[in-house]
Length: 414
Image 1 (cartoon, rainbow, N blue to C red):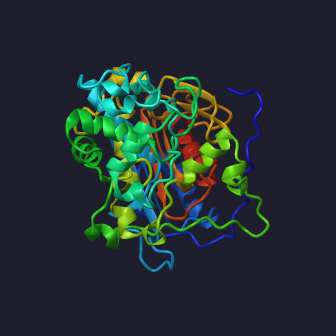
Image 2: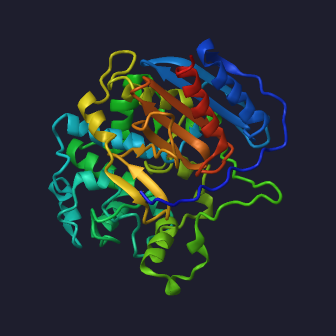
């Protein structure tokens, strides 16, 4: 881990707003968490949101409030869905880890043992472990792809990744596979199960845990799906530059700058297929477009914090594999993001002092774009999930920081 790294400042408080009317329930032990959830609306700009906690596998907090639409006319309901973005990476990893538990996949086998076409362009020694740990060197496809193909054409995306030469020597560094990890893991799952990864997530993860987690929603779910509201900085607010390479022309870019440009800009998306469209909501894009709610994410990660078992006794993953999945596989400066990241097997890991997930250093989970979070802490026996429709900062959002701090303040209160 780099010894010197300056954390970006937290955004300033938003203008105060009235406290929302809360729905749901909260165990009195977690009243600090409830207070911070309210403050997210009053001080930190939330419009619609939910928070949930599982302790020892049982749901002990399930709160929601606010509005699911930008005009603030439609109340957030118990069954409201919202895009949870990169939390889908963690859940897709669970789908693959389940196949390891069942003996269908070996963690250190070459990917090409299951997906023969993947052996092209010097990738014959890339292993399943490298994929899960963001070490495969495949965060982007270099050849220009048709617009919206990540939403419309699974086979094209997978064939393009199979043909792509790694951007760095596999296993010699790591970088966040922002939009490709879902295809990479999902295609391996499809090859060994003969089922699409969205089906495996539904049948082997969500339904058995009484959760809703959809990689592609149905048209009949649109009425209960929250708008996604872009982040709006306050006047005079200094926002850290996340994508400095955007100002660089491709012909002038270095190799890594070209990789970043392709990571976030290839394929482009047709305007009519942008976030919130029926095409985007219905696509199989597991790294990026899953829809869920805080309750469901907390139930999924709650099983991981409870030895692999849901409250109904369903075994999601073996305790041994959970332990392996939260060991450090990648650590240090991320070749895509340009800042420190730490990964286990498909999960983001706590980085004390930089990106903590509470007081325990082996907590794990996954953040989602704009402030979402789903974490598991087996030492404390708890999971936390927060979902929202007002985009905030994906890096150090004050809303999820406050909720994490309040959770563990309650768990470890004297």
